[in-house]
Image (cartoon, rainbow over all chains, first blue to last red; front, side, top):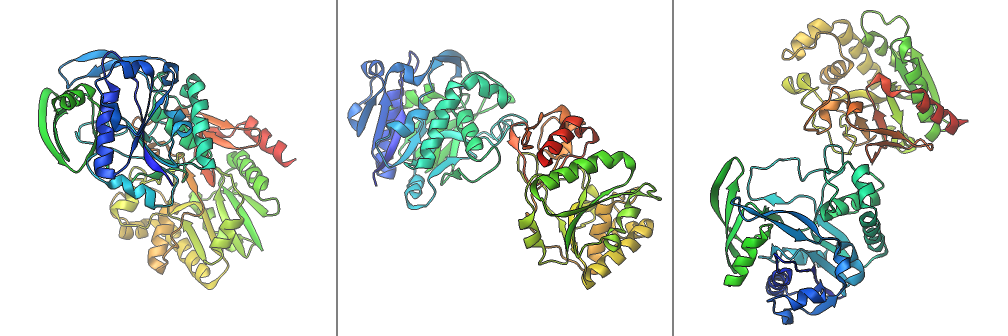
Length: 281
Length: 248
C-alpha cells in the first residue's frame, strides 16, 4: 500500500503557500519518513521561492478548483492585521487527487515535530481526524471549537485528516463536494455564524451526515495531539523539533508569554510569522 | 407477558399519553400498552406512581413518562433488561448525543451522594427483589419528610420526587442498578444541553422537525431511543396526526 502526505497550496499576494508546503514536505520526510504530494496551480509555481524538488509529485489543478477568493483580517500577532485573501475550497478533491492508498491530508502551516502520525498506518480505522486541538493560549472561548454553534453537532478540525481509499471514504468526499456546492444552504441548515466557506465546518457537517445525522463512529481521532496558536500568537523560532512561540493574552493587548515546545506538532495560524521563520532558516 | 405502562397524573396529560402510545406503536406493533390516567392524584403526583408495580398486569413492565416519544424498536431493550429484576436509567443524553453531566437539576443527588436515577424510563420484573423494592419505595414516599431529612439533608426537596424516592430506596434496599446506555434516553431540560446561553424553554432555542415518516430532528440532529421532551406544548395536533397516519 502506498502512503504519503497530501497538501494543497495556492499562493496569493500575501502568502507563499508553496514555501509553507516545502517545510511540511521536508519535515514529513524527516519525522515520518513519508513523501509529499502537493496540489497547486501554475500561477503559484511561477510566483514562489519554494524548492519544488522536495515534493514526490506536483499535481496541477486549475485555480478555480481552489475556490473563490475569500478575504479576511489576518493578524500578525495582535499588533496589526492585513486584509488577506485565501482560497480553501479544494480539500474535497483530496480523495480524487491523492496518488496514495493511505493519505494524510495536512495544512501547509502545520509544523511537524514528531512521528505520532505514523500510527495511522498501523491501525484499522479508515478515516481519522482531530476532534480536539489544543490552543497553546488557555484564554479562549471554550465552546468555539467544540460544536458547530450552539445547536449544531460536533466540530472537527480539517487541518489533518487521515484516509484510506475505500468506498465509504469516496462517498464522504463526494458528499463534501456536494456540501461545498450547496454551501449557503448548509449554512442555514446548521445555523452557521458566517456564510464564508470553511473546511472545518464542511468536514464536520459531512461527518454528521455520514453518521446518519447523529453522533456516530465514522470518524476516529487522529493519534497524538495537535497544538495551535491563532494568528494573534507569533512563531519566533524553529530549531528542528524545538519551537519558540509568543503566546498572546486576549485580555491584555500586546502582552505575550514566551513558550518553548519540543516534539509537539503545532498548527501555526499566524502565517506571517511562519514565513518569516522559513525565510530565516 | 411484556407490556408498557404510561402513567399520567391528571387528565391534561391525556394527549401526551396518546402521542407517546402512537410513537411506541409505530416501532413496536405487537407490544401491549396500558395507559394509566390518575384523575385523583392524592396528596402528590408521586402517590399514584408508587402503585404501578402492584397494579401492572404484566410479568415484565417498562414504565414511561407520558412526555416521552419512543423512536426505536424496543426488542433489544427487552432482551437486555430481562436479565434484571429492576432497572432504572442512570445516564441521559443531550439532543446532540452527549452524555449529560447534570449539575443544575441534580443538586440534591450530588450534595447527598444519591445514585443518579431517572424515572422517565424504568423496567421491573415481578419478582421477590422487585416486591421488596417497591414496598420500600412506597414507605419512602409515605414518610418522605422524615426520610428526606435523613438521606438528603442538603438541598432537600420541598415535595416528594420519584427520582429522589427511587435513589433513596436503592440505598435502603442495597440495590445496585445495572449500568448501561440502554435505552438511549434524551433529556430535553434546557439547562443541560451544553448551551452557553440557556433559554427558559428549549423549543425557543432550537427547531423541532417531525418528518412525515415520524423521524424526529432537533436542529439538524436526528433523535433516537427515548426522547423526553419535558415541555407540554411540544405536543401539537400536527404531530399527533402524523403518528396516526403512520399507524393507520
